[in-house]
Image: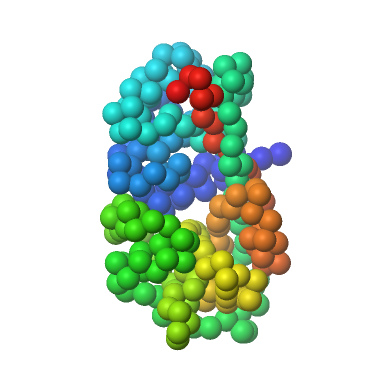
Length: 254
């Protein structure tokens, strides 16, 4: 049984940790849009009340106009807070479900930090963004949008990067502190350096920073199909709290 109160809290923390440039509510449907970055999390409709299912077709049409104005595809992000009637409506019209993801939580207090490296957070947002783009193999056109997002985070956060003397940044992540929770975002390791322990080392440094700052738990989101990352998080005693997926219109309806 999914704990909807915990889902609501984790969803709210995720929105604060990764803020969209524009936020609009249609009832309890949270519409997040960011012109400078194509991320689905930043450009999607997020229903937040299972009982809010009136006038679905009319509300989708209104949202479509907003997304067209941003030149973005209309996308729903369906967590357990989405009304079942909305899923049924989308199913009946052939909307495609994709990128299923899992939200995990772990107790930092119960983690063995004996071998964690006390890594200092990066202070330069521009340098961190450059490192993250290189590590994740993204195009340089992402820089302005990602810089805007990271710079707009109002919560205390730590930007962490592991470097190789010859090849520069090889792993990075962002840890955002929110009351007794810390959220982990944008975790990545350069492909040729994967499965060498860098991700584990980086996460432990981020968790150590969060624990020093008073965090007791850490949350993160991982795609269901990312088997390697899920195995790493399972080894750190992360537990699944809920899942969400994205829905988009079939090609002939776009």
